[in-house]
Length: 280
Ligand code: LER
Ligand code: MN
Image 1 (spheres, rainbow, N blue to C red):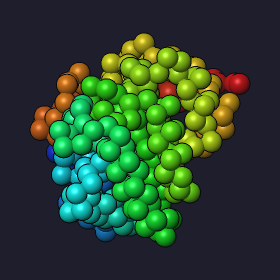
Image 2: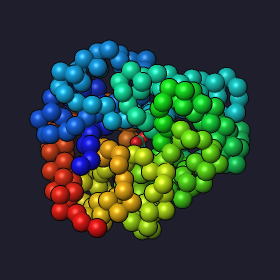
Image 3: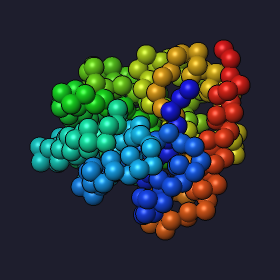
């Protein structure tokens, strides 16, 4: 049985207690917090998790231009590394096993003018490796997320993500798979998952439209079958959105509460049904 959670950043500025109520109501095991250690208090989160009997499966790093892991300029690089370290501390506080890391800023689809792709790649490898030593000390692992070409430029598919992780070559750095991005970038979802199997430590689920799994065209039967076949043991975290261009704009959209209720319910009942029916 997988642990099911829902990522928190998709509900924007919703009151956190309402999010916990939703997760409990629809039978989730846990939550994926946004990694905002400056605004989320670990103690309060632990109290809520305890009250609602929910775990924290993972943390979702939020990577804007202010936290650019491709930066070579020491001050900027230090800021991005410090963000990862602060997020590791928050992960320890709430008992998250992994922190999602996107190697280049979300919303930037070209390398910066000052340096090109190769330089960005090299710097991101070095910066993440530096922070990974700290994560290892604290028992947290980084999972690199490949994000589609319309949101980022550095690591867009699982093959690139695997190359990136191999180059970092650190025991605390693995991979995750996001089925929405994969629907845009992978030629064959099952094959792509099998290729990264030994490194796979986390999964985000959304349909090809980014709505709840079960509402679109992604073959989740195949996904569940493959995850079972490769012996995936991590969490399944829902990360659905209404159809909008900028994913982080969810923050400014108000609560869009009833839609999130509906998606939360559809996705868990659909995936659990497939999980129960899946045999390899
Ligand atoms: C985050 O997990 C993600 O999938 C992105 O599309 C938004 O940062
Ligand atoms: Mn994702």
